[in-house]
Amino acid sequence: METIQTRLPDEARSQPVKNAFRLGLEFMDRNRMLAAMTMGLFFLLTLLEMIPLLGLVASVALGVFAQSVQIYVGRTFANAENIESFVREAEKTTLKNFLTRYQAPAFGAWLGWIALSVLFMVLFLLFLGMSGTELSGFDETSLQNEEQVYALLVSFVGAGTPVLLLSLVLAYVYPIAQGRVIMSESFGEAFKAVFSIFTPSVWASAMRGEYFSFVFFFSLALIGIVFLVFATMMLLMLIPFLGTVLIIVWMIFLIYAFMLILGIANVMAKKIAEG
Image (cartoon, rainbow, N blue to C red; front, side, top):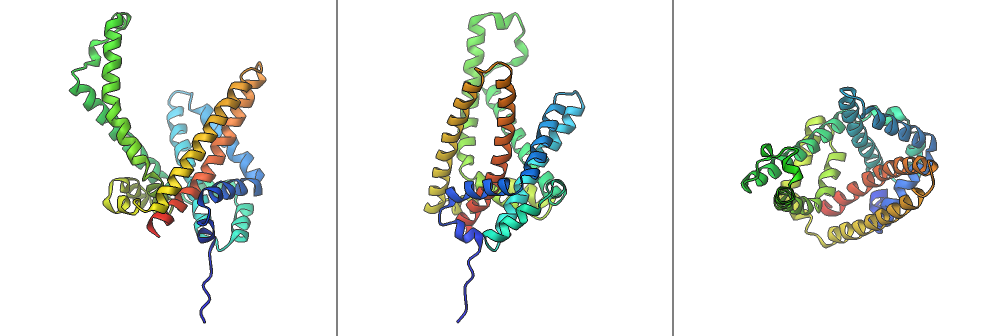
């Protein structure tokens, strides 16, 4: 009789939200040196972003690096036979692996999401233009007039609302698109995977009840964590100087942790939706 071997992604699917967080944090805990080096690089690139011209290069590098981390961890999870093999891969991962293993699809993904952001910006400007607002007509004198400022804010809200609603709708299938990005093999494939967010096949797969449940509860967990993070930051701000340092360290830690968690969660979402 044929024996069916259950792989880690199949086991994790039994409690997808809990396991996405658990495995992401497990990856971090099993390689603390990698965590420290990655967070240090995040911090360095963030500082370099403040320097003219060099900041543009640093911004691109930061975006690509963030994608690369997600892709590496997500694929490690997707290819793991069991928790032991996942842990072994986490323990032997180096910063060089993060930087170079999936550089091409990471760059394709970053460029794809940037292109999509530009598309949304153009859409916002089109709606703003349809409202009759001419930004060129506003100067420092105009902004001192309360009526003109109010009219400008109303125009911005009117133009931004449909764009925001569209963003919220697309956010529902974002995990599937990013899951496809993570499993991409090349620059072009990753770039195309970003725009799969508009394809009927992705939306059809997102209609599964199991996928809706995963996205709903994972979103609730994220909202709860964001609330706790905000409350913690408010408390830390009460500590002179040291509080600011702790906030920076805390934020860098959270960014890295979420890169790992999201890398796993997005692969899980793709698997749940597409089978």
